[in-house]
Amino acid sequence: MSLVLEIEFLTGVCRAARGTGDDTPDWPPQPDRVFSALVSAWGVRGELPVERAALEWLERQPPPVILASSHSARTAPDVFVPPNDPKSSRAMHTYLRVLPDCRPRQPRRFPAARPDDPNVELAWPEAPDAATIDALNALASCVGYVGHSASLTRCRFHAGDLVQSDRKTIPARRRVYPGRLRELEEAHRARPNRPTIRPGAPVFAEPAPSPQLPAEWLVLEAVGGEVPDIRASALVGRLLRQALMAGYRRAGLGGNIPEIVSGHALDGTPARRPHVSIAPMAFVGSPRADGRVFGFAVIPPSGEALLRIEGFRAAFETVAPYHADEQRRVLTLQGQPLRKPLHLAPAPDDGDGRRSLRPEPYLEESARWASVTPIVLDRHLKRNDDAEVRELVVRACERAGLPRPDPDRIRVGKHAAVQGAAPARPLAGEPPWTRWKLPNSLQSRQLVHAVIDFDRSVSGPVLLGAGRFTGLGLCRSLGH
Image (cartoon, rainbow, N blue to C red; front, side, top):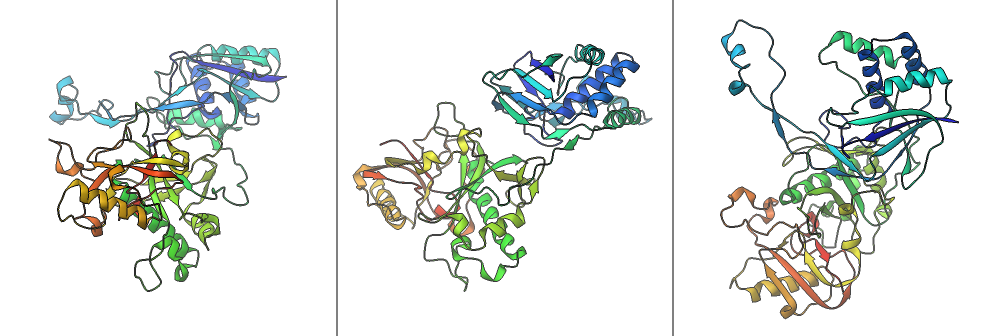
């Protein structure tokens, strides 16, 4: 019979972050977080010896399995809050900061997860004796929250079996271990008002003998850092391509980076055949879409597969080491336009990931396609009218190997037909810095959104225009 801990989030929201500076919600709550909450309750209750013995029994157990539902991550905007009270000082400005009107504000974020089911269960393989369960239950009854103090909970231990319902069993990422209680005590003694709590030890899983890279697209999910606006996605795509090429060099293959990856021939001239594209995966195409970028896709040319590209696997493994906390490889990007490092990891392909990261809307057969990121026209306009723009879109389709559409069945303009997609040019009254950020070679080109009706269904991906290899001109199916 198992020992089961039931946790019900009374407000239907779990406010907790996976780590310091990480905007990813910690769902489901990990065993080390739950154990810390129990230890806090033990301290509040007077540090009774019988309850200490129960906690020491619990920290000796193997990691529990977690039964939890799927969830959706809530947005985590910057919230400006007063810092802790300043230290005593003779300086006048120190005391002035105590006054409400003079207190400084610092930005903070409060990541939150909204689970489909607010009930979570943690199950350890074996239940202890009744006295230990009673002691653990006394602690659980005093755990008012797990994570942020706004994550109100009801907790209860019992001996029994998991009730499956519509939730799924999830292995723990972090665990407690013998000595964890002592660590928490020492952290509290060192800083009683605000102890520094290290995360529990990771639950190591053997990495797969080969990375689980999809045969067609490699979709990388943003798992840490700050993702820039979609208007800067072309520059982020360039950073990602540079990282992959750096992987070739670090793997000892720098002298033979394939043209299909670099986009350049060995003599440095631009490639004459299609090569790998990198495109943003954004929240678009639904009534509440806001265009947020959740990751980036590495897209091989039609008929190619990433794993068949010479050296690609080795290059990716070199720049994306395996992280036990994420249980997958993580690639870190740095440089402009990023204000801080961006961490990307292969998106899960088990159907539990964000819908915005699914490539199907960009790959299915359809007769109607609409641009999500604007198309960069291949040349400067001469007449600057819709007819000329439509003709350039026709040429872009032909260059991409697509059937030639009828110019009269193409609609062009500033605004996108896909909900949530950003306009091609700043709206009236918007500042100039809201323009799309382009590589230097495309700075002077005109951007346009388009809806294209082909005379028959065509298969994706549909990437059009001079910026199609950097994520511009990415089109989404609008149906048959």
